[in-house]
Image 1 (spheres, rainbow, N blue to C red):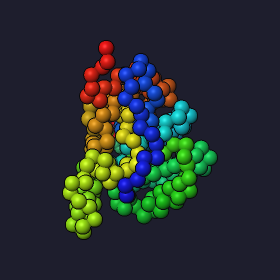
Image 2 (image 1 turned 135 degrees about the horizontal axis):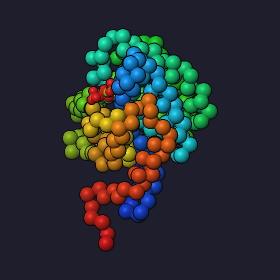
Image 3 (image 1 turned 90 degrees about the horizontal axis):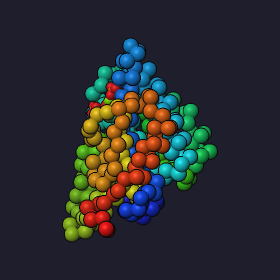
Amino acid sequence: MSSKPAFPSSSSTTDDRLPLPVHVAIIMDGNGRWAKKRSWMRVKGHEQGASTVRTIVRASRKIGIKVLTLYAFSSENWQRPAKEIRALMHLLKKFLKTEEKEMVENNIRLHAIGDIDRLPGDVVRRLNAVQRATAAGRGMQLNLALSYGSRGEIAHMTRCLAEKVRDGNLELKDIDEEMISNHLFTAGLPDPDLLIRTSGEMRISNFLLWQIAYSEIFVTDTLWPDFTEEEYLSIIDAYRQRERRFGKTVPS
Ligand code: IPE
Ligand code: IPE
Ligand code: MG
């Protein structure tokens, strides 16, 4: 499972303007509140949210983001009412169907991360088909976090390493940070440089706990369905003005 990174890591320069983030991760929150404000059903918010996904994927590809990870459905979201889950799965299938062609044309590779086997069979089949169809895409990798929970991911990685040790294929002393990273669903990818959460909640909600150790975090009050390309670009701009120190001192 361990592999050479497919993408370069961003540098830890203290220049005025950092380079673009290589990897952007987004907690797309606020669909329900967006609908509620209009006295609409929650699913309307999810529909509008799917349209924002399209906008942000296009914008990311356009400006040269190499990896975009979108939190679309958490392992905890399985506790929502069955009707809402059904609607979300239906929207996901529709999204995969309508976006496949554009992803192929724009050289975007789709990669699902999470406990995918828990998703309905027809969704899994469509996901696999789109992953196959876009496998050669080198322009940008779009990770869709589905049925994803970071603690579950870490437990999965631990079982994987423990099994290798038990079977004599791995020595304890060889377990280091890089090996752990290479056994997560994001193996081979750089950690997110930038984490964005919409709709104002100051929490991580079990998303990429290991990978965001040194990500720059931006929380906006904007609800996901109202999130625009313009605001996205302004956050990227603000990211580029930040100073990433990674625990070091700044040269004076
Ligand atoms: C995010 O919007 C979408 C998913 C979690 C699937 P929410 O549905 O969580 O919207 P709020 O937080 O209730 O407004
Ligand atoms: C996080 O949003 C999960 C996704 C965006 C898919 P939630 O709405 O589920 O998170 P909490 O419940 O506010 O923490
Ligand atoms: Mg929410």
